[in-house]
Image 1 (cartoon, each protein chain N blue to C red):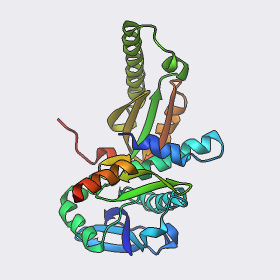
Image 2 (image 1 turned 90 degrees about the vertical axis):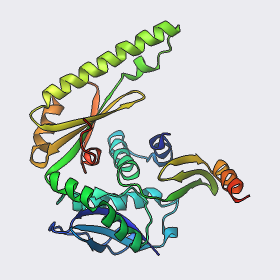
Image 3 (image 1 turned 135 degrees about the vertical axis):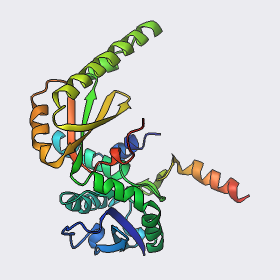
Image 4 (image 1 turned 60 degrees about the vertical axis):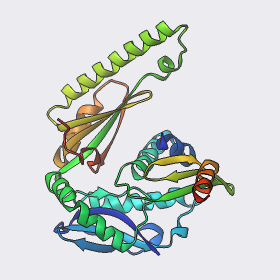
Length: 211
Length: 74
């Protein structure tokens, strides 16, 4: 048996934890100082290629049931640890996680993908120069759309982070829990080619802004 | 390294477009967002080991991983 950890939260958080987790395993608590880790003790062999998608979703359900009530630091699925390793990790990272969970107690992460139109992205360029020119135009359009979005959502968003995708941009917005509805409402009227998802735990904001 | 592409290719579900997008977003987060300590996973299809996924850093074929481990043992 090994510990499959779901997430870490502040031990003072008053949350209802689901009774069952991955593969119907009971959910156990490990408290270390101000932090609480939730995990299940299960056999590694219980997660296989055949049930991987199902177990990943069961994992997500546990993390999100807790996240709906409080800020969490989720583990990546599947992470296997002994209870001793889990306790040691909480000890080593306690200041970092406590700072994050306290500072972002009421924050969530919303995500927006701005993608290039498929037809435009897939058309081959006839020369290297044309390819570079096309890439520059696309990049300009993407960044222009991003700036319009940021302006549109400025009242809802506390902080932005972004990552480049091969065919666009992925933008992360730090939003107050009570502003999720207005964030979605403003986004629904926007005409840019985009998709959005959330709320998610604010993991892109775990590290403080690099100055 | 693009774990997301591999995971998407293997985990793409059946269903409507909207459900797929939402399911893929969830799987993307479960597999790619969160604390990484250590761990490993071999993804097999029809009894054939296809991908070795070292969750902290490595995405490689099983054959390459085994070769590397064999060299380290020599």
